[in-house]
Every structure is written in C-alpha cells, then in structure tokens.
Length: 211
Ligand code: SAH
Image 1 (cartoon, rainbow, N blue to C red):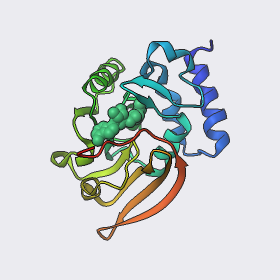
Image 2 (image 1 turned 30 degrees about the vertical axis):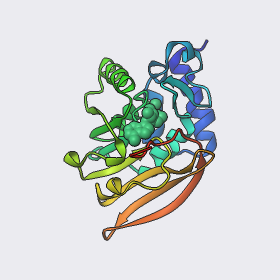
Image 3 (image 1 turned 90 degrees about the vertical axis):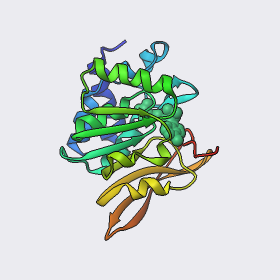
C-alpha cells in the first residue's frame, strides 16, 4: 500500500487535475486533508480510490472528484463563513476548514456527528462546529452564510437554506430523486437566487422533514 501522502498526490493528479479541477486552493486542500482518517478502518486501504465508500448508518463519504467539483464551484475565500449540510465522516468539513474562516456542519445521525467531531478535533480543525439535527432547516442562529454546501440529494432546494445565504452568497446542492440527480449552483444576486445546472451526480438522500 502507498503511504498516504503519495496516495493523495496520485489522487489529486489522476482524479482531479486530469479531469479539469484547476483551482490551486482546492487542489492544495485536497493534498493536505488526510482522507484515510475519515474512512472506517476496513476501507482505509481504499481511501484514495476514485469512488465513494461506506461510513456507517447506510451513508457514504463522497467520491473525491465530486467533492472537488463542489468545492471549486463555491470560490471560497479565507474570510468566508460556510454551512455544510450532511457532515457524514467530516471529510468535507475539514476541506472547508482549509478554505474558509469558519465552518458549521449539520448531521442528523448522532453517531456520525460524534465520530466526525472526534476525528476533526484529533486533527486540529478548531474552526469547525458540528451540530446534530435537521439540516434542511439550516442554522438560523449562525446565518447568514457566504456559502452552503449540501452533501446529500434534495428533492427540491430547501427554502430555509436559500434564506440563510447573504447577498452574493453561493450554494452547491445535488437535486433530484434517488436515481437521477444534478448539481445545482445557486448565487444570490439582488436578493434573488440565480440557478445554473452542473454535473449529474449520485448522492444519498437528504432526509426532508416528515420523510
Ligand atoms: N460530506 C460527507 C458525506 C456525507 S453523506 C463526508 O464528507 O463524509 C450525506 C450525509 O447527509 C449523511 O451522513 C446523512 O446522514 C446526512 N443527512 C441526510 N439528510 C440530512 C438532514 N436532513 N440533515 C442533516 N444531515 C442529513
């Protein structure tokens, strides 16, 4: 097995750069964050492979390329405050912490939230705060956000999340049913959401209130 730093370099070169990811801040963040620390022990040898992996509670850590596409779309700055919906393993939260000033992340499964908190603390990611709860409601007390990244597929864009973006704020969210989803990129311009459609993707469902 390759050492993790070499495996990460190969992942960045062959899965990300080769497919058109070019933002140096995103590429550097993906070189730095030890993805294998966020993957359960039985799958650790596959941590840098080109696909999602199980993380427990029927959930997955997303494919590195899809994570990079989502991060690149948000054009984060070191001053930004970001909300993630669907913490899962905490991997994306760590990447967001590399790219922005403050990260809030919500996870509905308490065991996943606890595990992500433990890993992020052990790795020294002090700018991430993880909440257990329903992410479709966002975090009104900490809004507005410069950017929102939704790590699970919504049937439609939750209105509460749109309402928590500041003017000029950006959101990336997979939208669709379990077998057909597309990334939507949304920017708030003059108080209105402007939507553009991006790559087709496959995420676990975002559980909406009452599901
Ligand atoms: N970004 C994660 C990928 C997580 S998969 C990572 O880096 O590992 C999507 C996660 O969204 C799952 O953990 C799932 O439990 C969570 N989720 C689904 N619906 C949710 C909701 N309404 N509120 C909060 N979390 C939700």
